[in-house]
Image 1 (cartoon, helix red, strand yellow):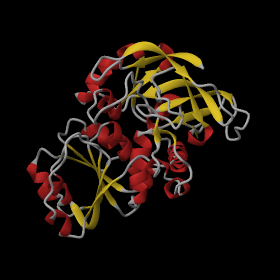
Image 2 (spheres, one colour):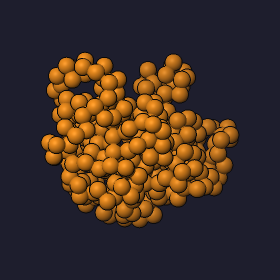
Image 3 (cartoon, helix red, strand yellow):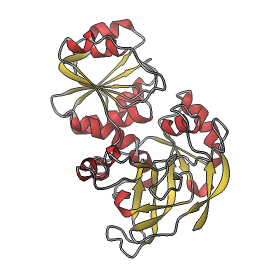
Image 4 (cartoon, one colour):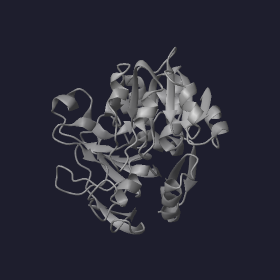
Length: 346
């Protein structure tokens, strides 16, 4: 076991504080990663504050991890010391069920193991990226291409794959009209990736205050959803709408913006249930879908795509001592567009 410094929430809704945690010894197929940067995802806050239900404490959040391999187990073949690597939302799965074999480890039928706030198959709790080092199976480690700086690559391990996977699945590309609801940590990546895929991209945001940013990031159009005229002007417009917000929306209104056969894909995870009149789905053969991150191979594919197109996250680099303040700012939508912790400050 190795003792490393970390920032943890000692209890639900409690401020995060500096502490130490134990990392397991490097096993035959493990890599030890010297973490350089860790993104702050809104889901970190939902879990640290038990917004999604009962959680495990103390909790070391963080599933947007970028770093450098410090040691490898004797059976490791994919990585060597010095390689630039990342870890996303998963650190294990059964690897044997039909979903795992199909490259969808996030939907493991036995239950995938989250990078934090989870219990591994060894019975031990998992601790995430707000820490100096982590030991991860090589099968759940991905390579960060040389063309991507580690700090802007870290958020790709959640925000990047969470938007890339559904955009790819639902056919975003040339000739397709894609709308992204919300220009936050997820939304700004959705805009960049959909634009790089060749789609015509529209941002649907509460106000126009981020319009200049949206257009700079690759959006072709930008509309305020607080303006009722938006829903009239854009009725029947989009092939795909990607909802990235974690607040409950009037999904019926947004379904009205889809073309016949269009899909509204939800990657935001509100804490409250939603109400929906199903006639808004039936009329126009529309689809209301969900998407959860992506498998390991697809995450690597996303990183390679982002490197090829020069896509990184828009970040605000912070010291670990600023984590609690950053949480409040994320909740207040006061970040452009992802906080990233410089883990040298832990």
